Amino acid sequence: QPLLSQPPSVSGTPGQRVSISCSGSTSNIGDFFVNWYQQFPGTAPKLLIFSNNQRPSGVPDRFSGSKSGTSASLAIRGLQSEDEADYYCETWDARGGPTFGGGTKLTVL
Amino acid sequence: QITLKESGPTVVKPTQTLTLTCTFSGFSLDTRGVAMGWIRQPPGKALEWLALIYWNDAKRYRPSLRNRVTITKDSSRRQVVLTLTDVGPVDAGTYYCARRPFESGGNGTFDVWGQGTMVIVSS
Image 1 (tube, rainbow over the protein chains, first blue to last red):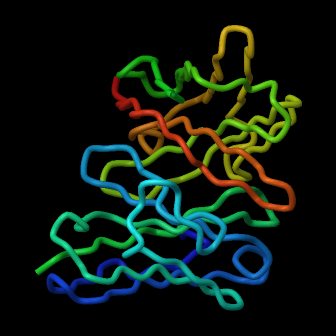
Image 2: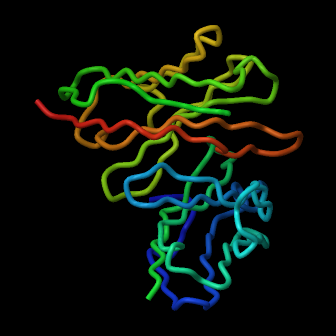
């Protein structure tokens, strides 16, 4: 079982705002920055958000991240069909090293 | 431009040792604050971090695999090697290498990934 808990799936219609939660504990999210990755089928993950809420160059500002306590969230506003993908949160866990969430499949209806 | 590429056998037999190589370009693993990691993904499942090696040759391993996994680097050849002993069906999946720079005070992020290499465990 992953140390970070994400909903298995979320869905939304084009133009809508959706959010994906990532729940952890004081040994991981509570003490460390959170990163988010986007993964399309058959391809490698791509960094989407780092250090809780920073976007790498080239990532649209429709994507935003936040963190509060032992939870983090990825928000996507103005949902587009090309956003349909799997999304993973990741942070450091004091007991071992990097740890990923179980992933969330985003479906654009 | 930073690139990473994984290579290794596609099929390994149960109980054998799996050796994967990540060849990278566009940065140096001797630079302070840089690390490289291996992450795997079983078919249809989530990402799972396996090992990390730092610029100073310090290493970290997934606790549950610590007795089976080894990570090494050859900075001059720009390669990082993952070795996993006594493989079984649960070790099948796509294996990725990724760069993990650590900013001051931060815990790092996997900012660039290789394309991945698929591993099948079968006799």
